[in-house]
Length: 422
Image 1 (cartoon, rainbow, N blue to C red):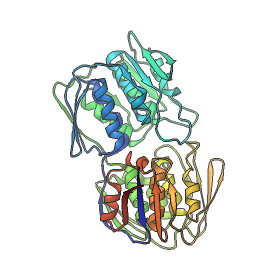
Image 2: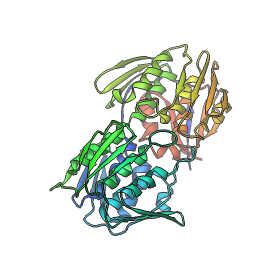
Image 3: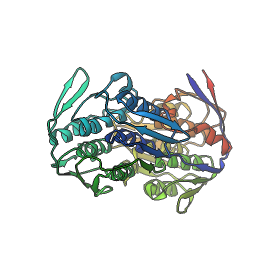
Image 4: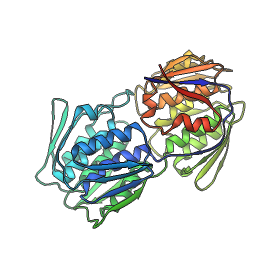
């Protein structure tokens, strides 16, 4: 098992290139099995979650080539309609093959998903959506078993107890491509990754309207593309935000290239509130850190609100603020697990239900810390970059799931970070 060793106190500066969006790549890989034509996907991040999804579609029957961030997928025939536990347990996004298999084969058997332990993430909205399209659905021995003689487009309300669901919106979109007539998704998620998947489906010949709004309409029918499909994935907004915070927490001066600033409006606004100086250009952001770091209050919300995938990184930054900040997490119940590890570094954090109260301290001290999930891993690395002494971040396999060449990019910016075996 690998760990990071970080010598803190080094100001970051230079240029970093952002990779493709992991949270777009995974459903788009699943969506590629909708067609029997060759699919070429560009700007695919070389991360563990992508390799897991490749393993899954290969198991279903796809022929795959992946080299230099270009992924070729060819699925002339679906050989299996089962997504097995030993693959799906590694990553929650594996369930996207549910919608794709239903659309193409009218049946699927998909293991209930795994992934980061950040709280309950029920699949009730996914099941509700595919049932509405005409599927019979049962849960059998840990598997979702779905089958239908005929899918029919309907109006579906996907509002959940905590708002919209990105996963359910995408899964129902994929399933609806195989339905007769028009499917209308109300309370659809608006995230850029949903739009990215919709744009890919358009490349396959599917008619979709409203992606990026709370109502999406999909006209079902077989994918009508007559030749190979080529598509380029959007940049990863969470990786962009993570490097922006890395610059802010180290008093850095970092130019972040190949990004979409308009996908990060809420994050940029909060960074400016903390005192960071930010220059926004067409496809890049320049972030200059400042002292003192100003406290601020963060309310996590679905897009275009502040993303849950960025609150851990901001917790590291606000641990060094000149006052008291709060973070209210409204989406996942157990997403403050990084707080205990930050406290071991000297942070002053109190958890009050779904709210973290962070009283800024003058400095953090390097020590041994353990990552609990993907974004908590990034949080602890950022804290280590700013801490005094050495920080040892264990269980970085979580981070490898979603950040491409993370330590190499940080070293290019001047960070003193290395990967070693425990």
